[in-house]
Image 1 (tube, rainbow, N blue to C red):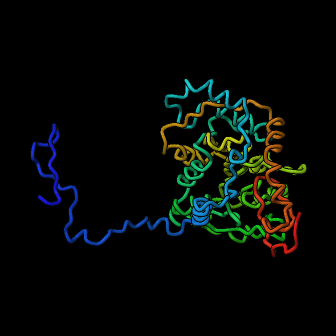
Image 2: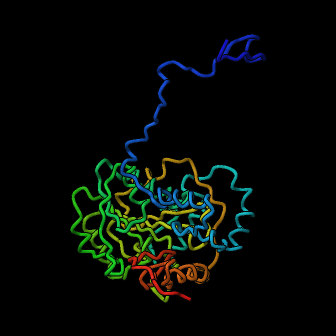
Image 3: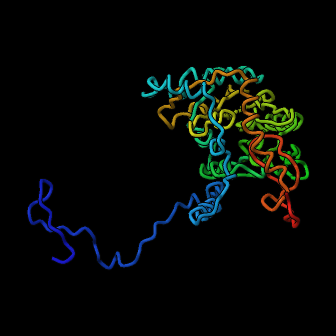
Length: 366
């Protein structure tokens, strides 16, 4: 029989005709799988169209230097040896499920780190370990937002925050971080954006993608604004110990007292361990009315097993991180030839250099 095949064996009777494809008129046209409407307003260009274009050029033989993601391993910076050894030593006890918040020693280490930064009133019960900060952003927003709730996000933004707000039914409202103010926001401008639907404010300090570090007065202004409007403060501090030339990064949790503050950080940047996928969220501030919210924030996954606890002292971690990352930014920040036509303004922290593009240099550059 044309278009059929005969199979013999335990699963098919001898001589049984089997047609693997249906060729009726209903399948005459190629079907289209429509993506979710919920993704219509979700954009993530770090891994979007621009990144796909770069991959196409790589396949054509062009050499592409990937500066779209803060990935220290791609530039030869290794995870500290003590951490690698701790992973190996603890692998045997990491094979089973653990507590859904993460293993206790890891959460306790985060508490000690927060205390060294001046954060008080926090215990391991208020710490959640996740598969990178990315997962925790999604979980914390999912537990908080209802349809149409608004979240204040800095612009320029780290696109994951915008995407996570949108995917969880919220609306991203952007507060400006202007170039002429070194990308530092104005708390008065932020206050003008608060409505009855505003539930939270995102603070990314040190900032990705601009490399800005907010002064204490600005952080205090944002903290008072959040407290006055009972907003949850999501403070993304993944680059907190990666500042340059003596610039100080102020932990928001040291300033927020009368509302919920969620500090997010992880191993990927300071410890150069992106591939380990270890992040944490530490809740502090006024948690008296937040019990249900905290319980729902970690009810979506059964466990998170992290078989490593960093033991280096804070000063040693800071110096190692600064040595490893500081040299990454300076070639781009100081370059003025055709390869990097940016204004000569150095970032104050992190891996990134977000500046106004100027006309390419037309002279020969040595």
